Image 1 (cartoon, rainbow, N blue to C red):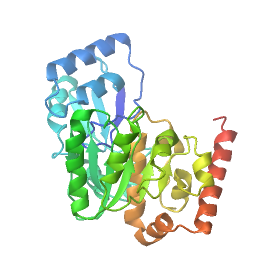
Image 2 (cartoon, rainbow, N blue to C red):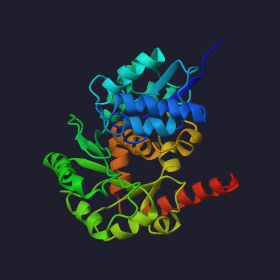
Image 3 (cartoon, one colour):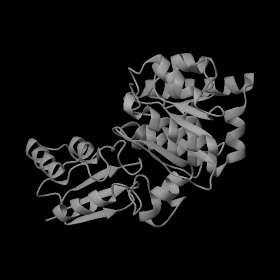
Length: 313
């Protein structure tokens, strides 16, 4: 008898930000069992990992393998948790999924190092529920994930993290996804901490509205979002537009658009990869502020919207 696998795509650092879609919907009994394991393990190794797994991972007697697709390595805070979970499930395999293998092949043949190389393309700063972790890298690109900064108690730590980025005068890519409800003053405070404008920002358009007069220059958005107004201003680079310029990457749209939770981190990492692979091309595209650039962005977004409409979105 073959056992079902639970596929977890975690692009956070380690996998504490968001967990991607899973291969099956957990039953009530499986949820109860997972919560029990999460309780036993506790938040010792990454804080919110047990809670996230409780939301997304189906765990039962029939599940003998959890496939962790990128985002887990020896140096991550969640590794100890995964090891302890391993005792319950018999086998945890760090493996590439068939859907994303082409993309990962660009980076590594060693599945255990995917997260390091993939996210290492942009030294990655990740926001957990209660803490920030900063990773130094020889590359000058940082991705900053400010997804739970609504909690006042982590503001000081967040600013310290941004200080690490600014001390290197690094290029930054910012994810503001998931910060709905944050006070506008707080968002402006975040924006003001950068020593130079980020190359790209992405999230919900409503969130960007309060940032349009800040230091943030370019907005990058997934085409799921309502981007018409921003596209007219020529300030959006759509995912479809980026993907067309990296012909060696063939990743199904569903991998990005149907993922649960982790899609925004994955998108930011993908953009970082684009910058790392073709820095001259993308720096020019991201920094150019000409009418041609605006037209390019608007046409990219219009084409993406037409595609979405044809799919019934």
